[in-house]
Length: 248
Length: 255
View 1 (spheres, one colour):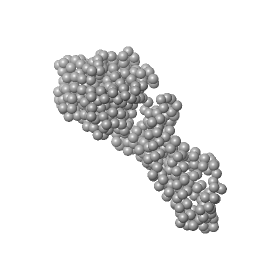
View 2: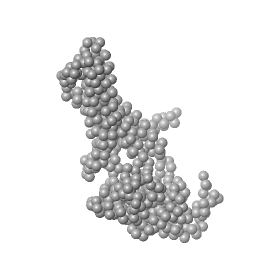
View 3: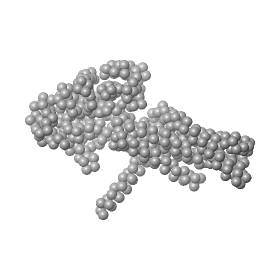
View 4: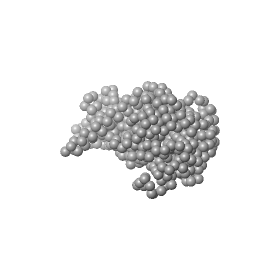
C-alpha cells in the first residue's frame, strides 16, 4: 500500500504540490488524472524518491521514504518500478540487454537464467522477435513495451507509469492499456498511472484521483469520478472550454 | 541599485553552488572507485572509447606537430649553426609541452564532447533517473569509469604523440634536411632526462582528469532539452580547453 500524506513540493517560487493526500490500496491501479502542469509527474518522482518533498510523508509498504537515504532508500526502490514517459531505454544497449540489465546489475542469477527470464518477459509484452534491436530502431509503441518489460523483469510490487500512452495512436493506446491490465493480472503489482487518456484510462483503473493545482480534488472508483458533479472534474472529463478551468 | 546587487549576489551564489557540485561529483566518483562491485567492463569500454577511438587523430597530431617542429627548429637552429641540437629541441618541446597539451586538446574535441553529449542525452531522456530508480548509482555507473579511463588513457595517448612526433621531426630533419641520423638521436639521448618525461606524465595525468571530470559534469547537469545538451557540449569543450592551458602553465611554473 502507498500513502501520501500532506505532501508539498516547490521549485524556486513555484509551488507545484500543495498538500497532496492520497491512499493507494495494495494491488490497485490508481489513475492520477489532471491537466498538464498540475503536478502529476512531480508526484510520481516524489513517490520514488527522485525528488524529496519540502513537507509531508510518502509511506510505501509501511516505511516513510522521505526519511530514508542511501542503502535504505535503495532497498525500497528495489521493490518499485517506474515506466518513464519516453521509456528511458539505454540507447547503447539492445532490447534484450536493456531488459536483462536490472537482473545483471542487481541479482546473482546465472546467464542462462537471465536469458530465460528475458525471453519469457519479451513474450509477455509481445516483442519476442525484437530482442536484438536497438531502441532507435523501435516504434513508439514497441519502446513502451520494451520499457515495461525492463520495469517488470525484477518483479516489483509497485509500478509507477508516467503517461504510458502519450504519443501513441488510438489502437496502440488500447493495446498498451490492455498490456498493463494483463501484466497487472500476471504479476499482481500495485500501479500508479499518470494519464491524459480520458475516458480510456477509466477502463483499466480500479481507482481514479484528479489532481488540480497541486491538490487531489477528488478520489474514487472510475464510476464515481465519471458521475462526479464537481465542475472541475466535469470540465476536464468532457474536455470542455467552458467552466472553472481556464484553457490557456 | 538593489536589483543590481541582487543580481551580482545571485550570480556569485550560483557560481559557488556550481563549484560545489563539481567538487562533490569528483569526490563521489573517486570514492565509488574503491567500492565494489567494480565495473571493469564499463571501464574497458570507456578506455576503448577515449583511447582507441582517438588513436587516428592523435597519430595525425603527433606526425604533423613533429614535422612542423623539425622544420621550424631546423631553420631557427641553422642560424646559430646548431642543427645538431634539432633532436633534443624536438623531443623536449614535444615531451614537456606540445605533446601533452595538443593531445589533451584533441581528445577534448573528440572524446570529451562525446562524453558530455552521451551523458547529457541520458539526462534529458530520463536514462539517469532510470538508473536511480533501479537502485543503481549513476555517478558510480557513468562518471567513475569515465574519470578512471581519462586518467589511464591520456598518458598513453600522450606517449604515442611524443614518439610519433619525434619520428615526424626525424622525417623532416634527417630525411629531408640532411641532419645526421646519429646526431638527431644521439644528442636527444644525451640531453633528455627522466625528469622531462615525468613533467609530461604529470601534465597528461592531470589533463586526463580535467577532460573526463569537466565533460562528465557538464553532461550530468544538462537541462532544457536538446538546446541544453548542445550548450553542455560547448561549455564542456571550452572549459576543459581553458583549464588544460591554465594547468599547463601551473605545471610548467612549478616543476
